Length: 114
Length: 111
Image 1 (cartoon, chains in turn blue, orange):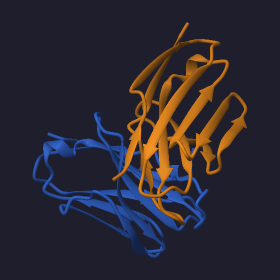
Image 2 (tube, rainbow over the protein chains, first blue to last red):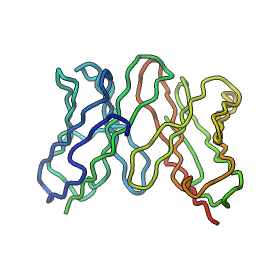
Image 3 (cartoon, rainbow over the protein chains, first blue to last red):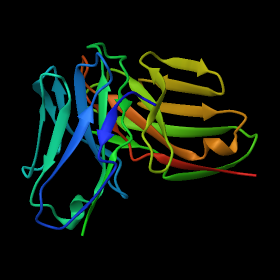
Image 4 (cartoon, each protein chain N blue to C red):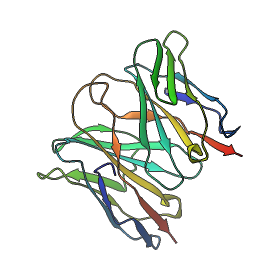
């Protein structure tokens, strides 16, 4: 158990809908990262927050948004869902600013858009 | 741009040694990470290299050559439970910045 908690574990929804994925980082970790993993792609970085502020942005679609709250949990909002958004969405957290800091991953949310 | 290459699949025999290679071309370099990911599960951290050379950790070792943009993960005394995907990732900027991942190598360990 990495200490990173993601809910829900599975989500099935229809095209055009909106969903919210939730992540609680490890206790004391200030950085939260969101990644998308599709069958034919590796882990694609979406967005990073550090202590409530957006720190880095990857290939995140405009239909997607995220935020980190004062208690450091984070939410990823996916709207106007398309079939191609079906994927595993991982949240990861890390503690310090050092380069050698590894990220700890949650168990992921498997999103299926039908 | 960022490019991290790994073989897509490998097969090895229980008890053997396998080497999984990773080459990278990134705009910067501040460390290379290896993760293990079992199907449908979270990636888990295996190793970190920032200086050239070999880092050994039990049955797993990781090597880095920065001049060649090359790393490998060496798994010894393979066990069936080592069947998983192995992800190479580079931190391309300084500080606690996001990792850039390769597509991973799916390793099958057979009896």
